[in-house]
Amino acid sequence: MDPLLPSLADVERLQENPDTDARRALALKLGHSYVQRRFGARERGIADDIVRAIARDVEVEVRKALAQTIASSTDIPQDVALRMAHDVIEVAEPILKASDLLDDDMLIEIVKSRSEDHRVAIAARAIVREPVSAAIVDHAEVRAVATLAANAGADIAESAMSRAVDRFGADETVAMPLADRPSLPLAIAERLVALVSSRLKAQMAGEGERYRQFSEGLSQVSEGAAFILGGGEADVLDLIAMMDQLHAAGKLQPSLVIRAGRLGDRELMQAAISRITGIRYGLVVEAFDQPDTARRMLREVGLVPSEIDEVVPAAA
Image (cartoon, rainbow, N blue to C red; front, side, top):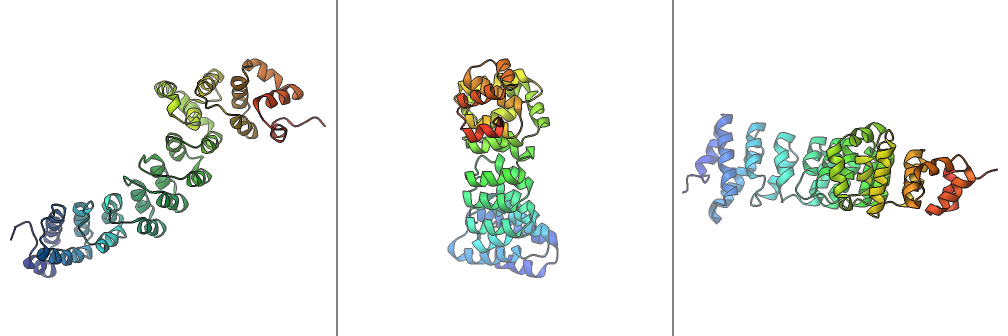
């Protein structure tokens, strides 16, 4: 028999030897044999019995050694993968990140029932489908949701993004990777603009190289990422320049004007009005000292009367 393959003697050693190192060596040996697909039909049954026994070993180090070697194998019994995925995180992590034997229902159950570390590992999988992403957004804390948002292989429905913003949109570890996602829905982008802190805006506005990269690739990024990367109330000129870039890319929408107005972010609102209407920024600022002129300007932007009333109430 190939010396890399387990034998009945291995089974006896597993049962009788109290030495953790010996059992760990067997776990590694067995795991490599699965990965290399070295089993014939007769040997496979023995191997499956051994791997089930190792998956129940009392020592974490033994189970961890097995998990690290078999994480990407599709030949191990599915019940073993599932058992190890529910184990302590030292054992579960490689399985949760790499095993294709865990279907969406299994992953969702783990998201609901296990620790935040388990959720982070699932959020980092190469492929995370929408139902699993939704479960992470609903049940995880900020660390797992931030990991999910930064994962290019994660499919996140707009409804799940909205819930992520509801729960953690003011946290930059979630807001920034969400804003950087390709094809970010405009409604989500605007919500991120509204929630991101002045401190974060100023911080990102100061990163000249990132601003340059953003400006050069604006047509490929979201409106929300644009503001988070470039907007800062402390520097109106930078804000106006950003409006120019967004307008040139066709990404400056009236909906941003009303959202900024509702939040009381007057500089952002006025800069957007200036670039949508073509009216010089200083004149826009002056217009807001005269309610009738401001209301007329907002109509020109495209706001309806009820929206205008929220920003500039009609005279009594």
